[in-house]
Image (cartoon, rainbow, N blue to C red; front, side):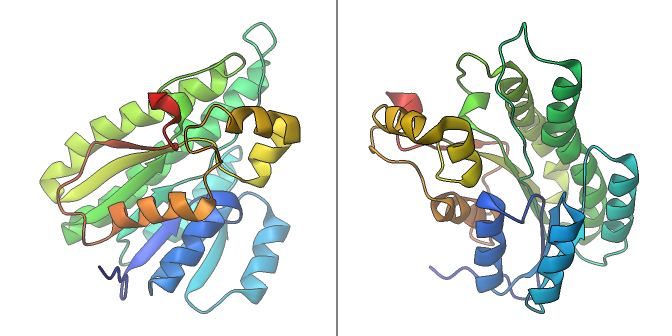
Amino acid sequence: MKIDFSNKTVIVSGGTRGIGAALVKLFFNCNAQVIATGAHLEEIEKLNAQSEDRVKYLHLDFTSNQSVKACISNIIMLDQIDVLINNAGVNKIDSIDKIEEDDWDWINNVNLRGPFLLTKAVSEIMKKKGQGKIVNISSIFGVVSKPKRAAYSTTKWGLIGFTKAVALDLAPYNILVNAVSPGFVDTQLTRSILGEKGIKEITETIPQQRLATVEEIAKTVVYLASDHNTYITGQNIIVDGGFTSA
């Protein structure tokens, strides 16, 4: 089965590292024109200076209204957007009695408000063409949870609900909307949060006995965004090595 995004434009938020960077690479290898966003301006400038012709990076900091408006203004000028991947996400671990309001607002702005704003803007372009694919990157912590994940789980649970509702809104326009919920993925963020000891402990609870690679998550997302997906919408696909089934 060949997946080809020739003559298609794909937007990947949070596309500078981790799962997002893997998505940019895979979409590029499948011949897409890729627009990726990132929150750090210096990193964006550096990536643009060394990127391929079919990859462009835009600065998008969801905590800055000015940045959001500027990025969305650039996006809505595009004649064609075929795929939107709402991947940008942040996390901070704290129990409910210790979560600061600023941290709560930061996590909600990036993980939930961000996908809302991008989806609202991009779906209008997709409607004109009468087709499109939107994939929201949620998490297993939008399905199950654990201590000190109140803010993160709130946003990821909300993103799954958002996915299902938006899928119904956009179904008449042949725009398919799904979520992918990764389990524990071997990224810089995961390692910084869990540490080596935490990763070892988590690995022992995963039936597959290992963390996912970013490429494994990216492959699932790319299938849902491809022309091979013609009927899956409003779904949350869990990719967790069996963790939530154990």
